[in-house]
Length: 491
Image 1 (cartoon, helix red, strand yellow):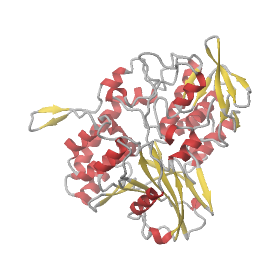
Image 2 (image 1 turned 120 degrees about the vertical axis):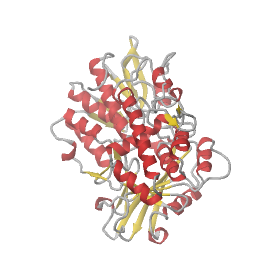
Image 3 (image 1 turned 90 degrees about the vertical axis):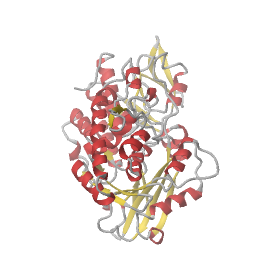
């Protein structure tokens, strides 16, 4: 197995339980891929995902690979409110976790009568899109006739009273303009796409499943940080006798009799294998094989994925009572932000939508007289970090953290280059989840490849990026290895 990302760990644990001898070769000195931790002066921070959506994926992994359930190994805390939003017009709202009625009521109270109902109606339609795409996109290997997913928009058409007919949105921006009709609700929806580096003007309407997934299954935090989830999965692998070799760079995949037969390491060592599973950037995988892995009619690896600029903040003073775990400070000029995301370059760096994470977790601070916080924003993958960009993010975050500048002891800047060094992703890009429609632009290549015995796992393969998707990709790869091409997914 190449790489110790979360998808690879999920596959390794399942394969080991199925009786396979599994060895994981990881280029860096630790496991988890982008799910890492930074520590300094008694402060600790998640440098990758800070929240866990759809924890059932990881519960299933622990159920299938041993007697100890996930909750015996890590503490999961449901985050409520799910998020607090500060809009450009000065209004704000705290969105309850996993309660449609609560969300409708909160939006009506904060933004005006009828606003919440429009969002609630949108969530009902988003559920239809979820029901239509959940199994083929998340629970089954990618269909050979994936074009059906690419061409068919699962988000339902909406009746238009004046036109006396239904009208189908093709992009998320059209959903926002036609159905939400409120700049704050538009920002709420756009924020979900921006979190995955997606421009709503070109992202298919099927992306409505992103806010629905969070609404329906809740937002969770792992006590001690999401890195604790990676630790638990790694330890489960070790208990199932998965062998890990860190500091081992794979420089090639060996081929024998027309199928993958092992890996070659930078020191010249060759390790034979019946199957090779790769959790790496697609460009690197192509170099390792030096042969085409996808044929005519296959989904091809693309240049998908935006990057993130992240600030780790060490703050003096206790976190105030009632502070939200997650606050989203929406961009003052939404169009300028999207234009920059779509067309990087130029001199201007617009104030982006900024997410502020403030976990109330003693494990992440030296004592109760201090606080650790994480601030991040989506950037075009090609952006070169500038010190001024950190200042822009700090100014935005000050809307969410009282007296931020006075409380700031120090901050650490995490650029896309850090992510690139740790995960090998080009430009430090973070892969988006797979989405239906849009001519397949947001589908990811299948887990199996045209080279027999070689499989792809993790965010750059089906079903795409994100912690739940990584766990699902691991389950699919394990199924394909154990059962062969006839594997059709979990039941």
